[in-house]
Image (tube, rainbow, N blue to C red):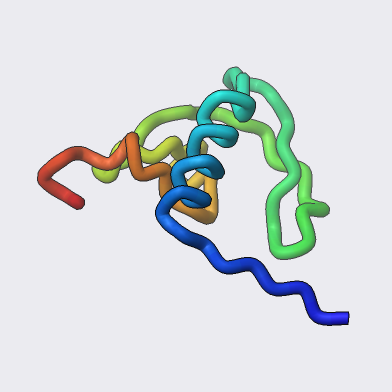
Length: 77
C-alpha cells in the first residue's frame, strides 16, 4: 500500500500552525537530552543559546535538525 501526501500552501500553513501552537520545548542548563544518530547518547546541557540564524543551540551545537522559519531574521530569508 502506497501512501502519498501532496503538500500545498494551505497544508503547509496548517502544519506550521499546529507545530507553533502545540510544540514547545522547555530546557534548562543541567538537563539531560539524548543525542547522536540513534538518540542513545546522554548529553548534559551546559550552555543554551541562539545562533546567527536565530535557531536554538546547546553546547555550541544545533538543537534541531530543521530550521524554524519564523525565527530566521528577515534579511536571511
